[in-house]
Image 1: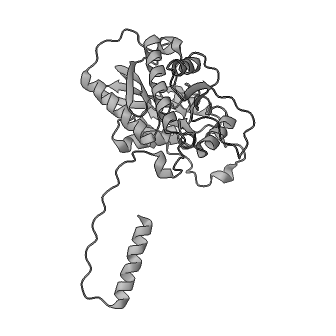
Image 2: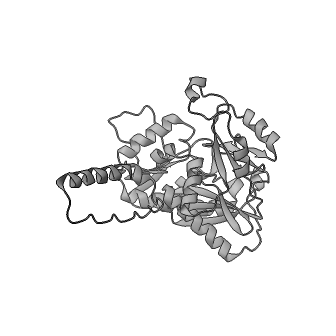
Image 3: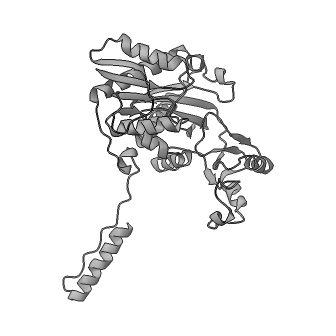
Length: 345
């Protein structure tokens, strides 16, 4: 029997509905249940073919358990190694390399020194910081948010320099980003499952949380929706996330990717609505079942395997052919130069 485990925290509607949906299919050799774990023994693999992870970003013990399970052949949705390494600033940099529109964004030094560090730890940091260059690039209307945050925690809406520095003073030892605000006409939140399926959901982050998913949206331009779908897939395929939400703010017809590091996205019935809830349950069930049939499967724990679709490398200029006649000394020197070039490329 191949078991699909669901690891979760405070959420109620999604985990139970997913387990029930999978088991209701009565598939031979496959069943779903809530993950149960105590102290994890190093020499014992997890008893699950697949684990759907909804909580390890908040619980280091669970993250360590999932890495151990992955090492022993369990397929995890989402990859706990890459999730541990990822951050939002990297996401924006990658998006720009992929040709996905993102607002100008900078990463800021900690306002207060992280625990265990002093002024001497910051001797490589430019001082005073060139704030004028920051505002020239981003502008004075933007959002300040943690580089690894979520759930709108410690997010500040900035309208001028005074508000910027007031927010920065409140950021404690968090590593913050400052991003240009998008004056959006439309806003979309997209479920992406299995790096193949996309559900575009009209959304308004200005509304109270339970009213953000728009129930009766207007008709949208088909070309805009197609670009949103393609960019959402491009980002999740590059990052290797099998379950994610990607948010786009649309200004002057351009969808800007605002937030796409959500590997345990909101899937609560009462916030996403019945239709979206049924879609995400069905698609995650399909994904988990397909992965269970492939399990066990050991990860290729190389860095290159985490970024599934890295930007294309720049073409190197072909080296000019050396003259036919050379002294032995010149040939030896040329080989050393070539070796040094290869090491630095």
